[in-house]
Image 1 (cartoon, rainbow, N blue to C red):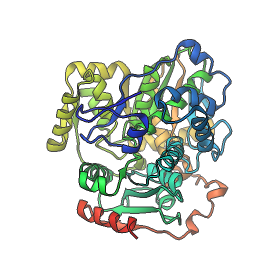
Image 2: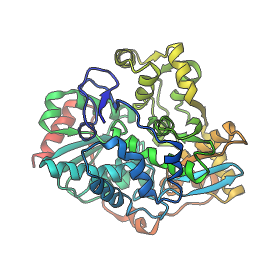
Image 3: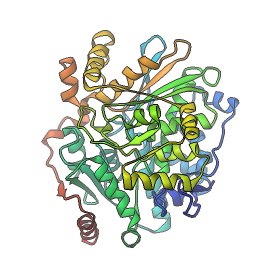
Image 4: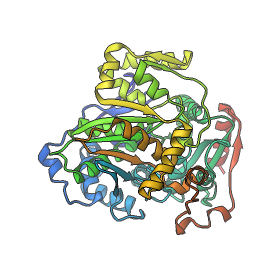
Length: 463
């Protein structure tokens, strides 16, 4: 299995090399050269398997010979051993034909744990075998950072630096990043918004002298291994609802497009997915693009669903790559237009290709709060604001003949202010995190400047 760049100018790499590299040297994102498929019988054989067994069968064809079967299976088991639910990704029924896929039972109470816990194990195994050490830099709108720090803290082969927008994440998200005591993890509060953090991350990867000097690696959703790990729960959910003998639809609250792109990969692999619905908040660039073909950035407005306060959705590049017939030069031109002019127009043919797989909707702040209130009052279910956006948009796109699964991306206790405002209830943290607000914080505030960031990272890793 080889991996190629969405911009067509970087060498093809193995799974392990693509994972350790993160971003391609031409600025593109790695994708599989070909998508392995599973037959209906292969999918049917997943019935009754544990989440770990399903994960092994779904991901194994993408991994190649970098890990033996025994090693890969062991790493999967270690990755999910700390989850708070034996099913790992259980489902609850909200209404006839509408199900909620709970992805918040991991160590940091968000769906990012499914990928990050595994990628931490994969990195440590690969780097130890190679006798190497890397510097991981990530940008987060809240959940990726805490999941990365939790997955990599205390590991011998990595230093981790997480950029998050100062004052624009929830207090629980911030404290999950700033309270770990391990010396190899560093929380950096950047003056700006998430897109600034993401831009600085890409600038560091494109500064090849710095990238090579500190052995830079990335675990943002730009990393293919992150997307791959998220493919698994589409299979586990669909199989539990009757796949492959029954089609299933999914609605995904998303800002960076990685989680729903994983659903697209599952569909390409042969999972009978009917609809993939993108659900956005008021920062609705993905909904606007899928509606009109214009991808135009605008001001990022802070919201009660901060993990979706994004205008530059990195993983959308992967979808564009397929929509443009895997033409790397066409994608590179679009990304140049985005960087220089703040946007681009998707060609009619490519837009039609996107619409064959993706639908979209949005929820305002008032609609999000109303959905939280309604879910609690009518179903006894407390939703985080991101999950509420998914539920609201799913209700608008549901077909009574096809089960709809909405991805619940975070535990409501990660966003207690919004949940309390809507429902009157303040959701408590799980017992294992009950002292989170008593732990001392360790954080560095940084200016939105590439040179200053690179200097800080050099100093920290050379101590």
